[in-house]
Image: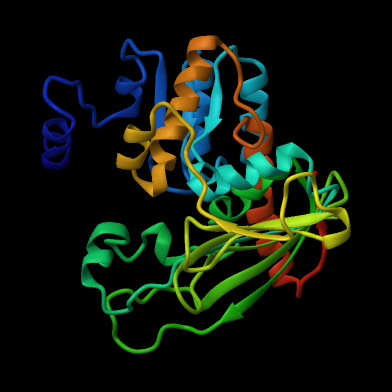
Amino acid sequence: DEELQKTKVAVGGDVAVYRDFDAFIEHDMDAVILANFFNEHAPYAIRCLEKGLHVYSECISNGTMAEGVELIRAFEKSNAVYMLAENYPQMLFNREIKRVCDGGTLGKVLYAEGEYNHPGDPNDVQFKKDYNYFAQHWRNYLPRTYYITHSMGPIMWATGATPKRVTAFASCAPIEGDVPTASFDGDRAAIVTTQNDDGSIFRVTGCAAFGGHHNSYRVCGTKGSIENLRGMAPQVMLRYNAWELPEGATEIDLYTPDWNDPDKELIEKSGHGGGDYLTARMFRDCVCKGVQPEHPFNVYAAVAMSSVAILGHRSMLAGGKAIDIP
């Protein structure tokens, strides 16, 4: 109750607060934002869809393969909008990678990389208080394949590809000593490879913790490649082969893109490099227009990403065995 009252004050006054989801879902509203525990979104999304409520779901969309099936079935019986609240594609450099890919100058996409690398200080007491504040918290158990959408979402958006087969290996280095951020997991990175519906290959990391902190993405086609530079965001490097330069292009172009968006001021105030505002705006627009979000924010792509997380872990446990995504 104390936390609910704090939240009520934080969001600005006279809003209804609930301790019970059964009571909450009867509130007169159009849409629900699901920001509960990472692995528990699907059951609540399903109940919302059954009531015709639009769903803006944090990631991943489903914690098990069976939940993915149930979620899609509920969606197909509903007239509501479902959107995965994956915000990393909307960072400035990822929007530029998407723009260049859409322009077609890279040729046929063959390969893409996504690295969400988030190492942390093992003695960071405040992180423990804010993010994994009791022993059974999901963050203390989460294998590295599972937090997949920040590394995979941007390259799925840029290329339009959907994973169809996955293989994964873990790189392990348990945190040693009696430190605040110790967990039950020993892996620092999951190196996940997918074969996609367009013949391309992805290599992503899930949520990694190696080297210096960075979020980096790269798309390679038959004619050129584009990437943001590790540790130098939001700069991107666009490169073409000298013998097939597009008109007006240079062989190597290192530059900082612009938002080119009328809401630039609001975007730059927003969290996650502007992604929080832009992703929420996408959801609002879908609800107002009565249309489903584009790939990879729709329910089918969301479940595909979650399947990479789940089956990637199974692959890792089986020594890197390739597993088809149903």
